[in-house]
Image (tube, rainbow, N blue to C red; front, side, top):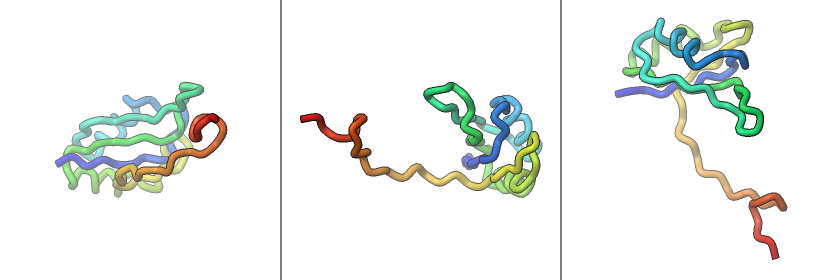
Length: 98
């Protein structure tokens, strides 16, 4: 079963291919994605890597967590499911106009 990892602290210039190649050193990578800012189209400095097995995911965590990657220190751990958020209540779209 594949295990999804959160990867924080990525240099903003890192490509998805570079991320996938780096984590492939720990095992088989199913997918790698870098989260982009919707407004600017630039990297937000974090992403997700899906490893093919729990063992490969653990190897990747041990290999990369706390390590320097392109001049920045990575944070790597098992990704947690996105928790639902309360709706925004502001004048820019969360509330109703009367």
